[in-house]
Image 1 (spheres, rainbow, N blue to C red):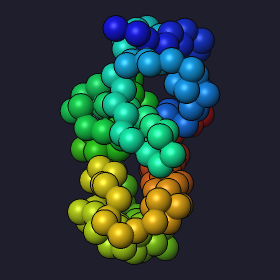
Image 2: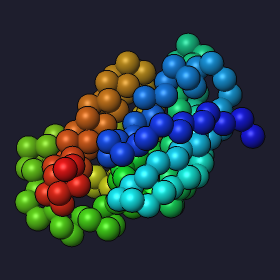
Image 3: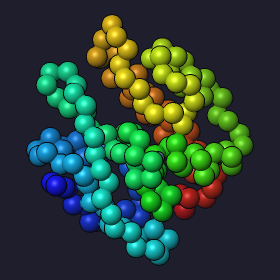
Length: 162
Ligand SMILES: [Zn+2]
């Protein structure tokens, strides 16, 4: 199974966006990315499986498959293992005591517009029939940025960024 090896230190990467590998993924047919890093003095080495879906102009959009629950996601968060926001949310969500209202309400609006299931921990959904690819891409990107901000705020609270 083809894989891209990624052996540099991941200590500083608390979130791992699939877009980081966009250029490398274009060049081959990778089905997984091998990661190896040390988190809080504990060594980790494993492969993260990938999934791809057809995009406009014959391109593909790549997704992570969460190592824990195998859900498709574009960003993984470090909780020792890199996991999706659903899995990290299951661990840390209860500690997110102060919802970031504006971000949450914008997220809610985007998910409604896309007809996706409600809730920040839910996975990225498909493009609704009749919506332009460019609109979908823009909303997905904004959704990604908003969820990253929300989770970054929650990680800050947990002291994970020091
Ligand atoms: Zn997961």
